[in-house]
Image (cartoon, rainbow over the protein chains, first blue to last red):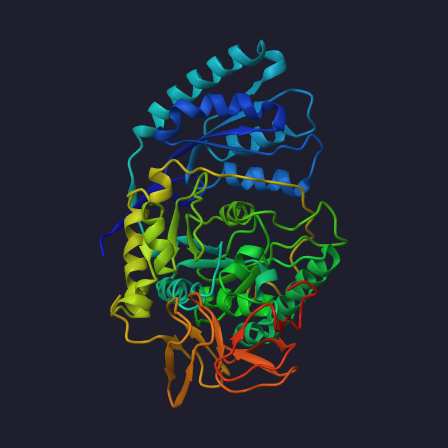
Length: 399
Length: 92
């Protein structure tokens, strides 16, 4: 495997991309931020944002975490002016991280046309500066990798998810931090997962987090189970869960984290994405990209995305590698897929073979080769309201 | 398509197997020592009963319970939303 490299940041972390993000701080600023980004999106300028006018601690933390993510080199904030978002606090956090940051307040900058012009000028200048930055050597033990599945079917649990599990086991062994998520998709796997925890206290926290997910979904009257899953021959939540669970591999579980928490060292981590307290603000994660955003807020440099039915999304900030479990879907959507794990069902290809191909793809992606979704300018991002309490005492054993 | 397998019993304790390809009614299926003929056209991923089972039986996949049968099913019968109910979720 070739040596890895990345962009060194002030906090010591290294990025595998050097993105400029343009962030709208309320939906009213979304159009202008998007217009600033659009002509520059193929030059590593991505759009993120928070639509709500009312403040939310979780959303603020997400915006801070993503704005100071190692893949991000500079940030332009676009504010309408009267929204509640604590824009100065966000700008201060970004500046303190050593990144160029500018805030444009539409109500103070002459409106739409003028703000777009000023924004593009700033982004183009900062883009030129960032393009001069050299990569430095980076170890696998500095890498944070997340995984998610979307548009699952019966093949996901047979091919793509176990292949990701294989890659996760290998990455963790080499010192990387690997994060899987969606406690709602682990309903039915609680006891397996508890047995893999490095301490009984962590096991209890994991079981509690999955119980919380079940209560939340019961209250809302829906699981994470979508009609598309049933068309893909998955019948029940627990069947989908067993297949989803395979993404985590076979290794020990080292910690439970929440959105915005960084893994304190290498190892396998579960990300609890279900809000704490009484059920508020609707569904925990309205769509896959909400979870991808949360993985990125936990420092993930790249995302391994398993799909059976066929998702085409990517993400702002961190590259998404798409692993297709279903050979028919791969034929239909091969332009969008990075890896055909469905070959396990059709060719003489084994699960470890596909896992090894995936590890090669991870290396190439870290080294700068664009993934399919990056090449197609998929830069999806969504952030909504949530409430979280701090981590329980047993969640990060040894810290 | 060079696979020699039509179905996969993922775990030895499983009482269903999973179709690895779409198949037509009348196809003869062999899964270890168990043989049956498909009654319906099926899609990739379809679950097929490896023995006759009665309503209330627990279906095992990956060696783990994935739900309870709401109807009797014959050897080779199709197991999905019409006859399998989650033990965990109201709507799954």
